[in-house]
Image (cartoon, rainbow, N blue to C red):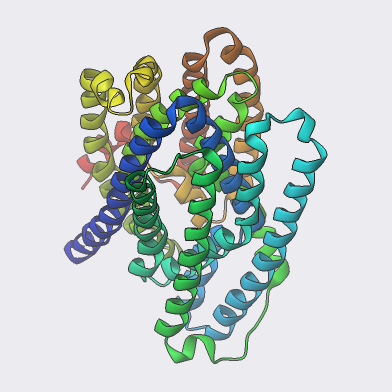
Length: 436
């Protein structure tokens, strides 16, 4: 058990290091962009990039999300033929869906150009051209993650991509180039293409021969039936920021979107730690569930929640006291987002308090229950933004985020207890530890 804890802490530390490095690089880049472009152009950029990430995720048809479920099982059973089949089919479907998704998005941009602000058209079009490449990057990150190849899973997208983009932005600033949203999104897109190619090459160079030389076996219907619900779960758990940006954009100016984006993005620094611990936990949790070791899974979940909650609580305290000073780094106009900043950080604290509920539901085959929960959450999010944002602005947008996060996280906690008998939240840890 001690060895398992050390492994979890070690893997979590590595993933956390990658994520925190990427977060720091992204933070510095956003500071430069905010100070260079101002809130209005930053708002245009983040809206285009949010649409890009959402379309890229949808274009994977959920195969990236289902990888940890199936590949972990195949490797545990030494079923290398099914592993090879899953990799090949995922590659085929992601390539086709990525091209079709990008093409459809471009057609819609052209068809509704009159309804889109003129300064948003070009950044949106450029972003859509890069959709297939980012979909591939996500897919191969998931392949590496399922094999516990954490370096390949996280360094390209979490560290290398933001490092190169920061370098590009700094170089443009040094050269005195006037930065705009379309130039920023174009540079970022080019770097995504480069990093995706590097990741694919290193994946195959590091793959052991038995993984990809067996005759591939396919269970496409099963994979597809499982992946689609997981896709929508991922949209809420990993891309809720982008969903929020898209939902508030009709009601706010580009400058207000820029202020909200800075507040939310900075609050999400807390989430990088949560993600790192969850990511390191997933392979072990999948194995324990496959083996029927519910007691071992409970111990793992208990340690995971403890690793997440303490640092999150400290981070929220810092934000409450020094939030205005943190936002002023981006420029004086961003201090207006302080109250939203605090509310959004409390949403991240709530996520750490309930435990890794979405992860547990996904790896144990309860994705359909998650899908229903997030479908209701999406409707709730649309309604709350429609009601609150026109009246309260970015404060209403932050309140909508908190309410929706509270709804789906608490409801999934109830489902985890009901279906798995696992008690994942900090409120139940005392009783669990008392029985040890």
